[in-house]
Length: 145
Image (cartoon, rainbow, N blue to C red):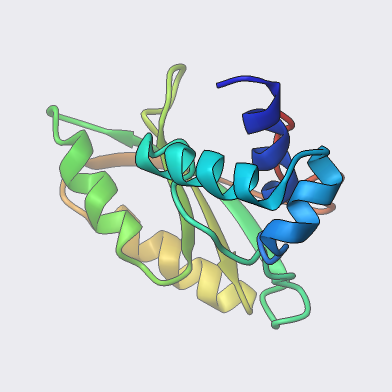
């Protein structure tokens, strides 16, 4: 990857709906160059997917929570897979520190959050959870590469 490839990726991170022509103009190369480089980047799987970043508040999901989980008996992947299948879950991460798993999830109501937490606390091998509610999002978006 060189600077041109990274500039193409950055342009797409800002707006995945940009045309090849607009990316080319922004990056300072030809449309054909963007097309060929983007094909190569996709073949390398350096771009996982193209998607929209919804404003969950405007969609009625006003509660964003971070739920940390301790998992016992080496059943980490099994528990993570079960948690990840829940429709409110946006991300599941293995992590270091006092907890084994970090879950980021969105809910429309406190009751929805409460039900979710109580549900995962009943899963086999879940020893403990700790939940934090995000009050304000200062930055959420792509990392400049």
